[in-house]
Image 1 (tube, rainbow, N blue to C red):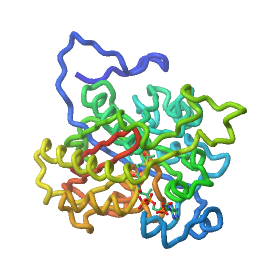
Image 2: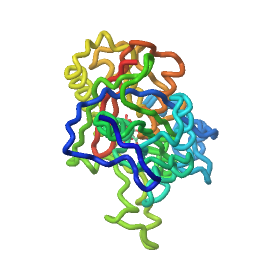
Image 3: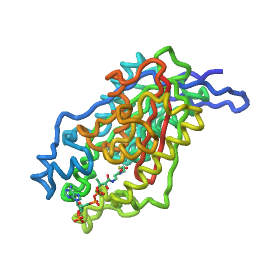
Image 4: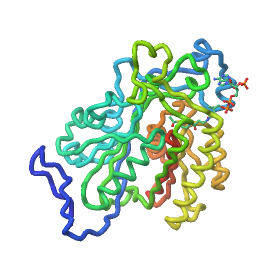
Length: 351
Ligand code: ACO
């Protein structure tokens, strides 16, 4: 059994024949890529914008600077650059893609999806394309979704991307949030099987708790509270967060998700070469690592240069860690995230 190849651009791969038995195929990550915009916004720059200090930001978060996209640079533009790098590293052409999933909370437009813009940009004419929204957990939600398609033979090659232009939804007058976020994109290509040196997806976990939807949200701009001439000055279409409470949930959910995944996949924590956590706050990362009993030299951190790029954070970190040689053949990598929703996710990959 295999996936059905499209016969035309309008006849895409999703042609399930439920009368045919199928066996689950192993799924591998065969390439990664990332992109961050050129412009750096440093803590010193922020000192001139709001009542804050480099010392406060570094002590409370670990962030030194973040990247800000150009005014005419869209989420799909960053996604496209990360995607092209991932395709190049995988040795896969855009036409070979059957599926494109973009995880984002800052889409170019409500509709069409950002994934469709990326599809057009890269010429992936045989792919089905759609977005998912799971905030900072989005990349691993996309991974889990793509694994189902590829693992069931419904897609031969899948491209997952996380891209965020958070600078457009940050309230630049709110010091409690504007120091935290940045822009960027990361991507990965998946396919069934895999060659030596590819990353076999051993297990993945996703979860949500909608009862805590109001801890971190963009309250305005959607159908619940459309932007009007009257409310535009209230900046409702910007990120609002109860940071302290979010912090506690971030630590416990990332710990629990990682622990349950480790147990389910039968992984010895001592065999984990590198943990790649969501890059929101160095104190959260350290607390999670401590609870997982993983020493800090086996935890990947790049948030000091990018801040929190939501869904893109773990995707960029995954690509950078791979390119820096932080893991190699046979090594197990554990990715773990947490975000608005609340949502959380983790994935174990043996390279
Ligand atoms: N500069 C100076 N002072 C500040 C700043 C700032 N930028 N921001 C807040 N403060 C002040 C507050 O006003 C407060 O002052 P007060 O004591 O006089 O009232 C004091 O600093 C402490 O504020 P806290 O909010 O308690 O600071 P905390 O140590 O909790 O750090 C932070 C805040 C960094 C936001 C932290 O709570 C955090 O990282 N939370 C989790 C973020 C997260 O994981 N989000 C999920 C993913 S994001 C997504 O899904 C899009």
